[in-house]
Length: 417
Image (cartoon, rainbow, N blue to C red; front, top):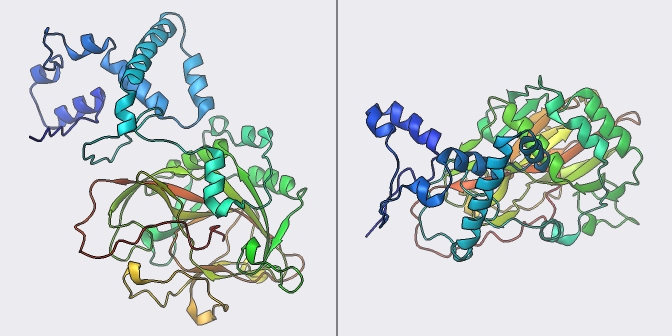
């Protein structure tokens, strides 16, 4: 027997809107939901909490910004706060009583498009140490702590007029585009002022500290890193303010990302592990592909985000360039994602992007790209490099028989740009 629940993950308000869209009778819409309970109680009587509060509480728990959660809870006054405390305690108790189900995992097939899990439910979140250990093989380069005043300055609740805009890049469509206005000029200056005080760590032309031999290798760039969930939450919310940011991706056969035969993915976060990269005269990065970090349970990074903190112009070089991929005709699973051992020729460059401070380039991880050599002593390029995290939706395509290749850890162990 199959229990098919087409709207099991929709909230009450969403069910009501769907019912109105389908022109269901008002008597059906207003009917009290009931289950097959032996004593005839309705669902709300059984749970002890109104459906409206279940929707509110689920959405509140799904918020990734702890400060916003506290602000919303603190805004409740009088009876509203009393009801919140009472109802949330009941739901938390039910959640604890059902914890054995979460440990075992869901046996259902979920065709999710909207967000399903909440903290303490089906999905387990990684700790900061686990993330740092999994990415870059535990060698997160030159870690520093981002001062709280920087985060406070970025709090967009004080800046309601931020509306980032999307600009196309060649014919890449959703696989590569620019978002302007992600940071304001004064916010970029605050980052640069802080970074100018750091002791940067040099790396080689491939961006990898482990490969750099300081006695014989030229310096490609300088690195510093942070782990900051507040910053990642702010950046993701600003991305979502862009009306053309692709929250939902439908992958095609040649989409240059590790979508693993699941064609539908949705953006859910920005990676809190962030690398700051500085280029000075002669600095560059060879043509390469980025790679995903797999959180497992259907969530992984799939797009690289390159946020410019300084202005750049073509006269000084230093452009982020998208390169013609000689493997473009090969199926994704047959491609080899190794760094190039030479620089790209001019005729191999599809697009050369010299962005302004506060603009960001977003590209699928498997788009071939480099950083052009910076010219002149007065030139300086500082970027923040992170990733967009996606969660898969629905069922995979029908697979052909064959050997399954696990995603594993990324080839480059560092996702540098």
